[in-house]
Structures are given as C-alpha cells and as structure tokens.
Amino acid sequence: MSGQDTYTGLGQYPSKYRKLALKSWLRLASIFLIIFGLGYLGITLFRPTSKVALVVDPRLESKFCDIPHPGRPLIQYVLMVDAGSTGSRIHVYKFNYCKDHAMLEDEIFQQIKPGLSSFDNDATGAAHSLDGLMEVAMKGVPESLRACTPIAVKATAGLRMLDQVKSDRILAAIRDRLTKDYPFKLIPKDAVEIMDGKDEGIYAWITVNYLLGSLGSPEHKTAATFDLGGGSTQIVFEPSFEIRDPVKGGPQLAAGEHRYEMAYGGQNYTLYQHSYLGFGLNEARKKVKQLIAQEASDSGRLSVEHPCFPPGFREEASTKDKKSEVTIKGVKKDSLTPATQEACYKEVRRILNKEAPCAVQPCSFNGVYQPPLDQTFAENPFYIFSYFYDRTYPLGVRDEFKLSDVKALMDKVCKHDVALFASKEQQEEVGAENHYCMDLSFQYALLRDGVGMAENRVVRSTRKIKDAETGWCLGASLLVLDQNRYCNSRH
Image 1 (cartoon, rainbow, N blue to C red):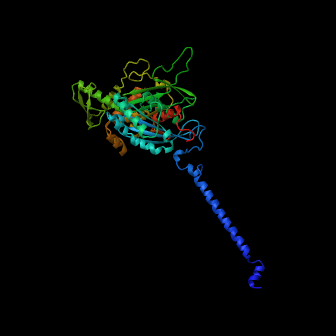
Image 2: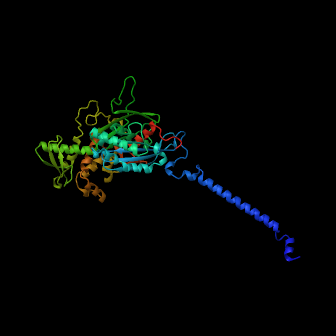
Image 3: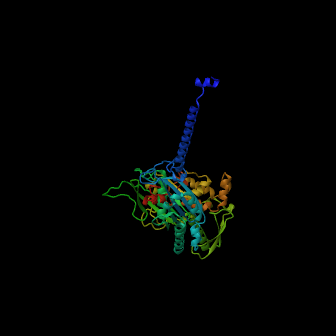
C-alpha cells in the first residue's frame, strides 16, 4: 500500500466523492447568501415605507412627533404676505398637528422695498414686485404640499391712503398673478385685500398671546399689544372691570366698534381695540412738519429753526392748507437750552388733539373712547412693537423697560449731541437719522399723553417671542387654519 493509500485508509484525506459533495454544498450556500443579501438590500432601498424614503425631505417631517392627531395632516404650511406702507414681507409658516390644534414649528421671513403704494398707477409692476417673495415661498414649501398651502396678501396703511381706484387695480393684478403663475391656494375669503386696521390689531394680539401661551387660560392674564407702523398704530387689550351686578349693573366696556369678542381654547374674550389711522410714525412726521410750517407761515416767516431737528437739517414743508411752503432748519448748537429741548415734545404732543370732543367718556386722544389703563389694565404685560422697537433698541433700551426710560432717551437725543452716546454704533445711528428727536418725542407722547400710560409702567419691546415674529401675520395665519382645512390627513 502506498503512503497515500495509507493516509486514505486512516481517513486523513477525503475521498474524491466527499470532495465533490463538499464543493457542491459550498456553492449552494454561496448562491443562497448572495440571493438573500440582494433581496434584503432591494427591500431596504425601495420599499416606500422605509426610513430612508421618509427622511428625504425634512420639510415634510415634524421635529416633535411622527404621527399626527387623527384626521389631521402632520405638516401644514401657510403663506402670509404683509404689504405695508414702506415695504412688503412674506412669512412662510410651518405648522404641525402633533396635537388637535396647529402648533408653530418653523418660520421663513423675507422682506422687500418699496411698498405697493409706491407703484401708484403701475398695477402690473406692483404685482411683479412680489415675485422675489414668492420665490422664497416656492423654495420653502415642498412641492407635494404647494397645492394645499393657503396664501393671503393683506395690505395695510399704505394702500388704505391710496386712491381706491388705484389700490383696487393693484389688488386685482396681484390676485391674477398669484392665480395664474403660482401653485398655492388662495384662502376662500378676502385673500388679497386692504386689511381693516381693527383686524391688524386683533391679529397681532392673537400672535403675542399665542406665543406667550396666554390664550385658553381661565386666568385671562393676557398681554396688551401696541403696534406702531408707518401709517397707523393699533392698540388692543383685554380690560378688567369690577364684577358686575346683573341687577344694579356696573362698569363695563362700552358698546361700539372698539369692542371685539372672540373665543379661543374654551375661553371667551372681550377686547378693546382701536386703529389710529394717520398716527403711524411717518404720518406723525408729516403732521408735525405741517404744524411747524403753518405756524411759521401764519406769522409771516418763510423759514424757521426748530429744536426737533439737529444742526444742519434743512427741508421744505408745505403748510396744512397747502397754500405755501416753509423751510424748516435744524436748531443751532448755541441756541439749545433745556427749554428748547422740551419744545419738540410740546410741539409733537399737539398733533394728538387731546382737546377733541369726547362723545363717550373716557377718551385717549383725538376724541377716541378708551378704558383707562391704570384702572382696567394695571398689572398684565404690555408689549410695544415695530417702530417703538426700531427707535429704542439701537440706542441701548432693551427688551423690558419703563416708560420713564423712553423719556430719558428722548431728553438725551434732543440735545443733538452724538458725543453723549458711548458707542460708535450708537453715535452713527443717531447721526444718520435726522428725525430721532421727533420720533422719540412722538412715541413718548403717544404712550404717556395719548393712551395714558404711567411713567413707572413696565413695557416690553421685541421683534420675536420664542423665535417667531410678533406682528399680526401669525395671528392671521392661525385664524386661516381655524376657519378652514387645507391639506388632508394623507399628506
């Protein structure tokens, strides 16, 4: 027997047939593993319910839940265009329905200048001016949700003061362009309109109290809102009166257009609101300059130096009756005294028309009824926005302060000496804007003499609460979702 046969006999080497069987088994096992692996990979990559497919577009997902409230879509977008007097802005709101009501998850904001009213007779140009904002919307909203995303364009004070024929043409051109050139869904009612000042104020109030978590609470510790725009200003608050005897009666909010009733979260709210058209910051400037020019003209002067303006300022202003023009100049440095510094505030206060007849007592200014703040709204938070913020924040007045701080800032600015400000940024800010003294004088007069705020009242001013803009747009969007359903539960 050879050596090989000996080893074979001892079982050290497999036979020819055993080798063939082993090779066949390995071949079958390899084929099985390859088929199984390819099948598993294909299922993972291509099944529509896999996690890979779901995370492709984060705009379709919520950071707070994976499953929406029954009967609701997980994600709902709303587009709100604010066509103001100085420019137009778009808010692309992303809401989730992790609960039974819409919850704000994210926001995209973009603004452009000038405002729609600047286009005057060019309605087509006004409509095309919004194209840049609409491109922001197209990028922000996923394609699968665009057809069920509601959009509204709400014009405010600028178009309110434009000729009605011109403003109607602008609005019609915008509606036509949105309908024909963009995939979004116009809201069923008043999709493109000049918004009533009352609604603007109410929407802002809803926004703030929604973000603060005040709505729906039985304590009714809601915040007041005072929004100073370019053409108008709106105040809204929930006054608190003594408990009224159903038989004897008692203090309560007077009837009228200022009374606004709404329900939210199982609670009923009776709000006081008023929009002062013509008392926005830009319109106030015009009124003050007309008053200065009229007084100079009445005394036979063609030019006048005024302490509302810094040295070097010069501007032609028409009188109120439009019959003549007067050159308004800034005050000279050697003419400044404590009395002249106070003169701007006294001049500005006059445009509030505090002496106007008051049909329903008590009145704020210009003959407008308003419950007194110190008696009906003494404790709750008070938020002031827009130009209030723009004129105070750059000069060091931060989110929470007293009205007396506004007075101190006004006195400082009206000395017309940029060296009084510590930082270079603040010096440049004051030096670049000739209307700072007038603007702050108007704001202080509006709060103190207009609506009757106490000097020691704490107010808050901010652009955002919980990273959301504090204007009227969010409140309007919440009501859009409350009144209609858009995307269905399959989206």
